[in-house]
Length: 68
Image (cartoon, rainbow, N blue to C red):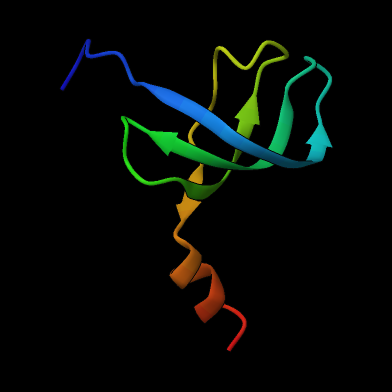
């Protein structure tokens, strides 16, 4: 829905994958989006973690299937 704010909470910061020239970092975190169960999340974040790029999210189950 356009204009609806996205609610998020970084439950656990796992690590920084890369840092770009603008100061944004590509990170692996566990994030809860819109009060839903937390998922593994890879995306770029600004320094204050207020703005983010598009990214990918994986449930624990889908992440474990990648190891099979």
